[in-house]
Amino acid sequence: MKIYYVAVDKGALSYWRCVLPGYYLNRKGLAEVAIDFGRFLKEYVDWADLVVVQRVLGQSIKHLIEYCHMTKKKVVYDLDDNLFNMPDSPEYRIEGAEKIPIQCKEIMLMCDAVSVSTEGIYEAIVKECIEVRRFILLNYFDFTQWAKLNIQHDHFLVGWAGGHYHVQDLDMVVPGLKQIINGNKHVTLVFIGACPMSLILDHPNRVFLQEFVPVEVFPKTMAAMRFDIGLAPLFPTEFAKSRSNIRLLQYSALEIPSVCSYWGEYARMVDDGFPCMAVNDDNWADCIQELIDNKEKRQYIGKEAYKFVIEKFDVNKNIQIWANAYEEVLNS
Image (cartoon, rainbow, N blue to C red; front, side):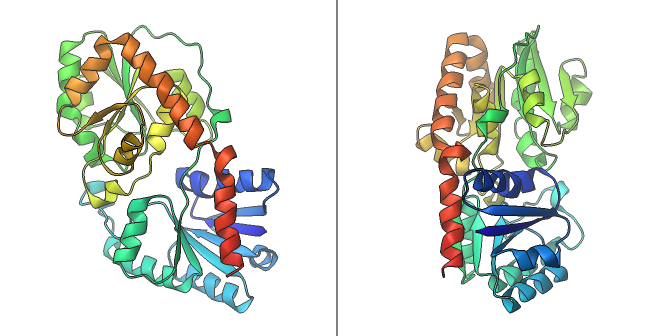
């Protein structure tokens, strides 16, 4: 196969949905791959058998899809967020947000198939009555890029890592984290990418914020920090229910035990046997404290979590799933 990925930018979404699978499709001899970010070229469209559009919206993409059909090319639209159930959170209140679901649906209906990263997004497409071939292609993980560094920290680190589109998720753990700070003088809170403002203002000497780092250096940054406990909160909305489990994979790749919300893909992993501390209500402080107090339990959960994710989410073992889906579209 010759696959041409058209991605919106060089950020994390494009990495997980285009760059990483594209690299392994090529490495395994399953496809020749080209990727463009923020643009597309006619020459690559003419070269490709299959064009994969990763979440790009707008009139120009409609023109691209029309040209693909004129030249007998197949098109897959890929989605890693539930754009039909945007959360009522300040970081998502952008101009024209109400038009995004309409645009997304119009583009999907033009395509030969849609690939999504989670069951929640798949279900949203079904509810929208979008009659198009659908695939769930999970986000898989390149464990070769993630290796622990022998770095010792003086403080006990409770941390979170991610982008700035998590205001609701982070706000829900603030009360519990304040309890942890007040009750554990040796604990430092570490945030990579974003942090609740109230925590920094109220506890400036106990909270460390590392600005967002590019996806290429993220594994090394995480390994250097190497939290003792990793936090994975999800505010219970339909949007969050559709988020992927990448954060849990990142923590587990470094044998960091997770305290996570029992919601969405996180709950699905827990039900499948993923070892962690799952929070059903607001008892974040209790779950975190239990791990702070029990080193053996932290180490056990961290090691078992690593075994779990490397068995089930290694891209090297699962890339054939992506290839099979693309081949099915080409042969339809």
